[in-house]
Length: 94
Image (cartoon, rainbow, N blue to C red; front, side, top):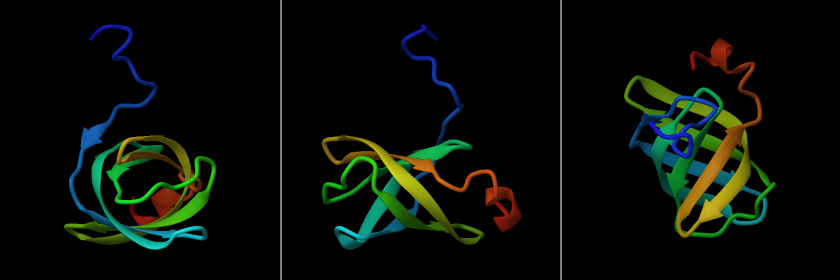
């Protein structure tokens, strides 16, 4: 791995359905691409403002998880989120 490929947190491929609740755009269906301990990336059909705090409803094979996250970046249809409550996520079974 080159230094340009290095990331702060290991990411894992994960393709599951996610629904985002946004104050600016309402309910948005999407698909996750990858996830790490501190965030995830998704494919979404709409633009979300960077910095917006959203609610994520992630449908995992063993059940669903609800988390708050901050929109960190957007590249075409790919949005990056940082979990806002990742320190308490372990109590939710994440």
